Image (cartoon, rainbow, N blue to C red; front, top):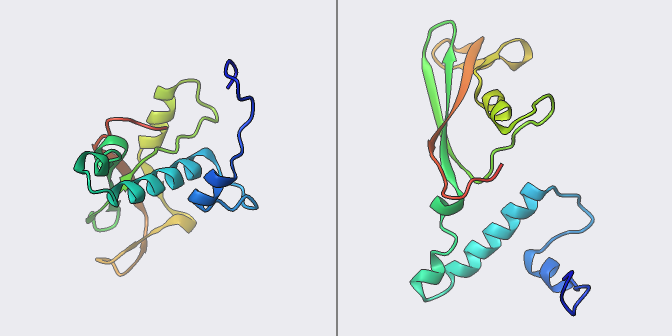
Length: 141
């Protein structure tokens, strides 16, 4: 737009198609998710297979595991989920590597954050660690 003829653009049709409520503040991750979900839904309606696969999950999404270990009975609990972005903390970090190390560090779940262990039938101290099982082709931080 800087070098083009058109200096402004009306975003009303774009906001309507994404059903964006401009009264609610959203960050870039929320907008990106909304846009990708809308694109996936629209592409999935297409009859052309190559169009339907334009925003495949393996392009922009990955697969992660969270492993929690009860420190009382040592039982390991694993949960899995997909992700499109990693929400990294930048506060106190000078590099992406520092932020990633902080994101993947093992956490102690204690005090008000204790883990409910099914084996022990109660809240217990535990460790909590995140692992990436499958990386997307395009990674978003």
